[in-house]
Image 1: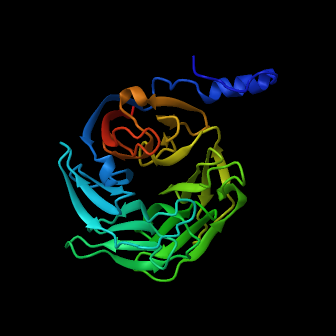
Image 2: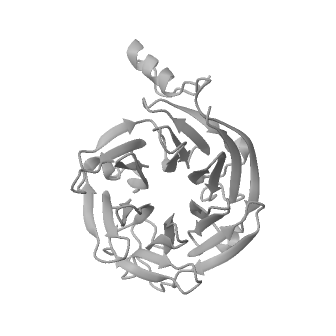
Length: 322
């Protein structure tokens, strides 16, 4: 039976909701099987994989947060460094105080976009061209920003960056330029005093909306994109996702989500009604998972080992869409 903390003294209805929130998936829902670690990384070299973008051939581009690098990993685990973001000798990054590469998004032509947080003028979105040229900053965010998750809406030519420190979703032209505050709401903010300082974290564009996870609040949020491109009202789609980091959708059409719970060493499936169940655990090889991606029937999971300090890795598993 799943752990159900803090149920003493609650009502019968509350207990029922808690049980429902961790109920196992039904037979017609996506299932995850055959987990296997395909690449192990060097923690002492700062190879802490934070985010992931999948290539058409099934290889993956990962951000190594602490090393300020983007790595390319083949399906059989061969790893090469594609780019290194410029050093920042005097970082003043919110919360972390260290220069850190976070989210990554890939355009159809192979261009990569990454979030870089330094607490200086280098904070913002950087472009990595397919030709191997040096990374170039295309948008500067405030030094008080902590850009984390990154999503590309190529159809409309915009990028969305989740600011974990300020509770903002920034919108930036794909071609580069001035960022604008697209969404700002208490639901996107970190929890004051008692929180870890990480509010809005993962971000994805899906079904006419921008979806965002909030790590401190354990929530999954949906923000509709209005016809004029502005943000609609923030909707809470799931709660109780302790230490949720980044996430992805199990398929292109439905609203079933797969999310990384960094503190619990789990990947959970979050159903459209907000209930969720565990599909991968530390026993499968997870070590502080930070992000997930889906390509066809393959699930990709990064583990950064920030807290375990053991075995940062890339795990692949089979995803059966039911």
